[in-house]
Length: 360
Ligand code: SF4
Image 1 (cartoon, protein in one colour):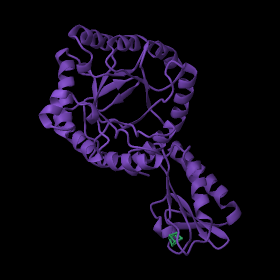
Image 2 (tube, rainbow, N blue to C red; image 1 turned 45 degrees about the vertical axis):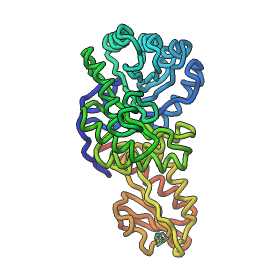
Image 3 (cartoon, rainbow, N blue to C red; image 1 turned 180 degrees about the horizontal axis):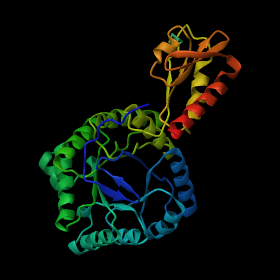
Image 4 (spheres, rainbow, N blue to C red; image 1 turned 30 degrees about the vertical axis):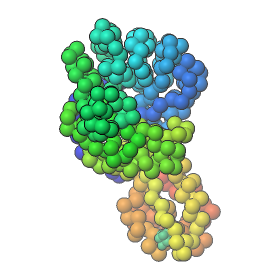
């Protein structure tokens, strides 16, 4: 069972009933792909995301129909709702009034000071934060002219520009993202941002690609940041069902010992010593443990030659052994089980371990 690694402390910011930043856990975020004004479809997708482990969800708000749908959506979901607005302060005001738990809008893009003040005052009155979303692909012209092309320093300068507008209005419930589709640029920008200010960081690699390529790219970039203790919320952006974003995020958090409520699978790569149909067993066990909310490690190994010993850190596992399997715990064989029932027996033992964890 894993321990969380140190997180860099930031200012704590409330998002609905969660506190983002401070010394709190990193929360998984995703974004609905539905038309926000289609309340039925949006709620259905958000409920699927919740079921997968999503902890904060964002919706697009391109028009008034979307903004006025926020209240109804809020009533029917169980996680904080972030509303994404570009430029239009009126939409921000409607979304806030409808009960948004956070809005994503760049104050420098709102326009006249009165409009910015109206949004900030509304957010203050409701006690909700504003996320500033810096994107390497849409930096302000004067910053691009200064640096010549999108750089990490330019992105930090952009973030500080928007932060200052809010701070000058005595608003400090701020969360910042520094997204780029170039992984090295995103890593450098987040690192520099973490030194330039202490607001919580929402991590993401934007336009990262399809399920396969996007998972690799996001994991490379966000993994580097997680390893440095950075990040307070995280979205894996994929051109795929957003439930996949949540699944990838959960796996990534497990890799870094940052998930306290999910089981992990260890499975061998297989080789010529294999004694069981390991690939299908591993997939079945992986699917099964995706619903287990205890931080146990489960191993599935193709043979017993190096089997149990290779997976000593596993809490429980099976290793193939000619027509049967060895059920083992912490590297020690507990008993032999017939091949036909080994997966079922493993599932029973997994449930017992999970129950023991919750009874502790
Ligand atoms: Fe090969 Fe056995 Fe190791 Fe799997 S556990 S990789 S089958 S030696």
